[in-house]
Structures are given as structure tokens and as C-alpha cells.
Image 1 (cartoon, rainbow, N blue to C red):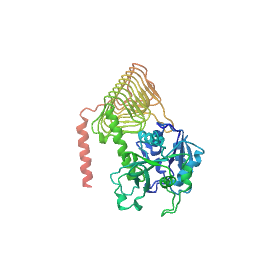
Image 2 (image 1 turned 180 degrees about the vertical axis):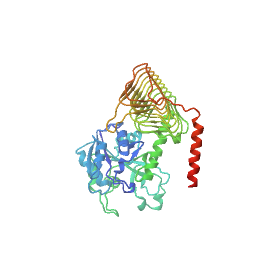
Image 3 (image 1 turned 90 degrees about the vertical axis):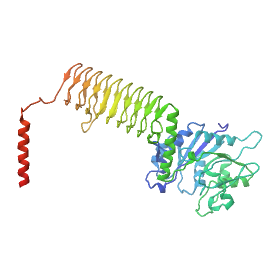
Image 4 (image 1 turned 135 degrees about the horizontal axis):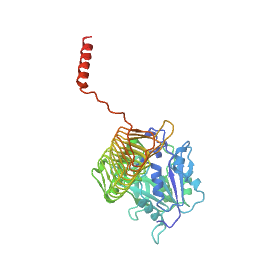
Length: 456
């Protein structure tokens, strides 16, 4: 942790042309959360005094997503150096460290950022570096800028773009990630001397290293991991970031005491919370807002979102839990069951082919196959209350608002439109009628009709 105050400038004004999207690039999600919010969540773990997000014009959706952080607009989009100038203006006379980060680099770690801040503090007996650059060793250095170090001291001397590098420099494996940390008192001085005299007519932040060295200031490098530094500029790179994120979440879940029977087929959200002794079968997807207690089993091909599962719950296979679902201890939810905005209390069972929405299912209640709560009248949602120990027979429609009392029994095939008192038995299906021996006569008649149609 740095001893100095720290401000952060997040560059997020890019239009994301290669994404081919009307959505600002940094708003595309990884693990169910916009990339920019991944970065802000990481910054919340370190000691940051002020954060400024540099956005482009007409990015109200982005400004809303990053609130209450300060936003400032880069109108000209004349390169990274120009974007940081805009951010520095919003910082005013801030003194300390200035971290420059990118909204499309969502996976950078807290440890790496703290390492950069500590490097800016410098070593005892030495003048702290004016600039700290985050480098990495990619598998394919390709078009990345190369970091040129002093052979004796190990200080950073220059950042050379691949297009301008000599064959010898292209052999260097240490590359520039773009992430930098500056002495706030020197950064305006460096920015004022940037030039756009280049092929793209842009102001490059990387030129600050050359300027710092020319002015007699030292620069240094901190090394990060390639995976955490992936920058997302296309849908392909977005998918690559998702893979990295999902692998991290799977590893975290298993280290935390969960068993994933086929890890590569399980997909987590950024906020999925999992207890111990949890078993997750193949092809399970967790949306935002899911919490699993201990000893939970989620069977294959289930989809959970906005749901809380307490200890001992079993769900699936092929179950769908939607937002507002709370399953109490030892609840069993079976195959092809959909639940939404419902509290299912301890020991209740909803085993097959049912839809339960806007409801309460009491302790030890049993919901038969094909049961539905008719919660929507075309205009408003209504609540169904199923009491403790109630038994709802198969293929029942509960037309809300309705209350089924504790211990009541509803016969299979019923449509319930009025409240049922505790311990009552109610059925609404039509009386069964029987025609003795009529089946054969029916078949004979129908065969004759069919033959007549064939003959025309």
C-alpha cells in the first residue's frame, strides 16, 4: 500500500468501433457486470482518494453506470495523452500518485495495482521514479510496444512502438500494457510537451517516459500477468476475457469447498456466492445475485438468477430460478420447475413441471406435477399463499390472489379461484362419467368415417 495519496484516471472514451455496437465499449459485460464496473470494484479494494472517468460525448449510460465517481468528457479523442490531459484537469491541484487505467481492461488485479503504487514510493535511499509502467511478457509480443531497460540499473529508458523498433528491440519480450502511474506534480509538465507529430496525429501517453528521462527523472517497470491485462476491443476479445474470468471463478469455487463435476460447463456471475460441500453438475449457469448455502446440489442444465438457496437444498435438473426466489433449508425443486419471486420454506417439495411465481410455499408443503400459480391478470401481479404442510395435486391452477390453508389438500386437476381453509379438501374438476362398452362402438364409427373420406 502506498504512503502517498492516490488518484485514478480511467480512460473510457473509446467508441469501440470493432465491437460494432451502439453500447459504449466498456459497458459490455464480463461475468454479468460491465467491464468498467469490474475495474471500479477492484479500485474499491485499494486506498484511492479520487477517481475520474474520461468518457466520450453522448455516453450517459456510462456516466450513470460509474456514478458517483467524477466523469469528464474527451471531445476530440486525440489519443491517450489527450485523454489523460482531460482527466488531469478534473483532478485540479491533486498531489500524490496518479494511476492511469483503461476501462476495457477489466481483469487487472488489486495486487498488481498495489505493486505499482509501492514502486512509486521508491526504495530507501533512492529518489522515487517519476513514472511506473506496468509491463508483461505476452506469449505473442507482436504489435505491443517494447520496454527498453537500462542494463545496469534496470530503469526504464524508453517505450518503443513495434512499428518503430529495430530487429534487436523486437526480440525483447517485455511489453507495454499501457497502464502507468505518475508523480502527480510532474504529470502536467510531461503532458504539456507531448506532440501529435506522428502518423495518426495523436498524443501518446507513452511519450511521457521519453520526456521524463530527457528531464533527468527515473522511470521503472512493474511486471503483471498477461491474462489480467487483456484489453477488450472486439467481441472476440470479449469472449476471451469471459473465458479467463470464468476459469478464475471456477477455481475460486472449488478452492472454497465446492465440487464442479464438469467445471468448463459451469458459468458464474461476478457476485456468485457459494458455500461448502456444494455440488454443481454439468451445464449450470448462474446469473447475477445468486447465493448458495452449504450442502446444496444444483443438478445439470439449471439456470439460476437472483436466487438464494439455503443449506441442504436440491435443485434441478433443468430448473429455472428467477429473481426473488428464496429456497429454505432442505427444499427440493425438481426438473422443469420455474420459480420467481417466491419464498419456499423449509422442507417443501416442488418436484416436477411446475411454475410458481409471486408466492409463498409453506414448510413441508408438496406441490404436484404441472401445478401453476396464475399470478398475472394481464395488468397486475397477484400473490398466492400456500400454507405449511399443504398438498397441491397434479395439474392444478391456483388463480391468484388466493390462500391455501395449512394442511389443506387440493385434488388433482383443480382450478382454485377462492381461498381454501386449513385442513380442508377441495376439488373442482368435473364429475367423471362412464359409457359402458362405448369405446368399441366409437372406434367402429370413426373407422367408417375415415374410409368414407378416402373414397371421396
